[in-house]
Image (cartoon, rainbow, N blue to C red; front, top):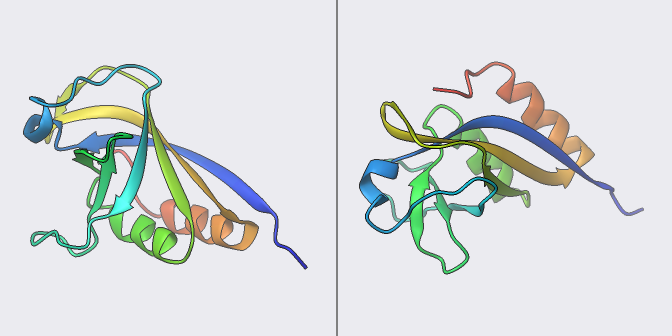
Length: 121
């Protein structure tokens, strides 16, 4: 029996824009792809956000990255949609919605885990 794919959306930010701002100017509704960054020496659960050309423009916040890392590692996919202009937080941050797609079971698990974390920090 085939499992039905579901979608779950949560709001957060893209971190590290201050590092990549020379190469990226965000615009509202821009779509980005979340990918596990295997070779990141600073964070083993780093999730890089990339444009269609594959260049990194930022990262998921560290508080949610391990949960999303597990989700992607187990077959899920996550896209990011820019929802606002950059703002100051810890470095520069760009508001976004993360769109997660996977089986109902995996989406339910991700929702439960994210409910225990502040997705905005």
